[in-house]
Image (cartoon, rainbow, N blue to C red; front, side, top):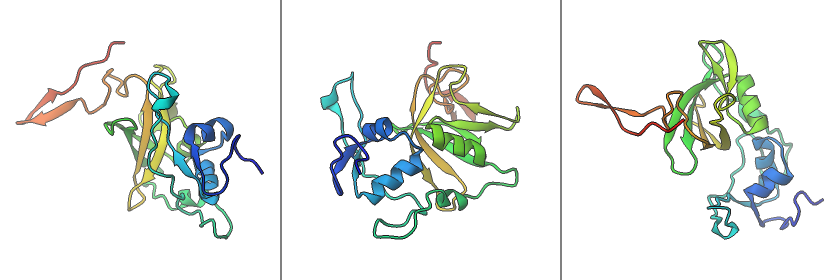
Length: 195
């Protein structure tokens, strides 16, 4: 069965862009296929559309809860069952720029918004003040495309690497952390982006 055009076979290398283009399932499903076929994923980063500028990144590791390719029944959603949501059914998500590691923001997710994020690869959060879901960039155009989701050691916090378009902060800064606490005062540490 060919899962990708030009599929390299067991143990080969495949570009993450091909995974997204030719196998548009949720992130956990793609990771499961990658793990079971023993592929190394080259996460492509292109500069000005130059295909020769793609650089590989770390290989994709099996998602938690997915058994090894040696055998066993796959249950990719079991990884989510171990997450620890607070009494309000929420888990904090720290959002980080995939390209440079900058922390962009922190937001809350519930199980449904996390499921939606996994299904669409676009960050969907739960607004505690408005008591409703919000998709980052839905109105502003400042979208967040998910590149990687990591879970901390206690399984009660998410780290989501994204491709950020425009400002992550509603005050139009690249990061919500645009102020430093220095000598008891807050000092702006970055420029506001143009609208």
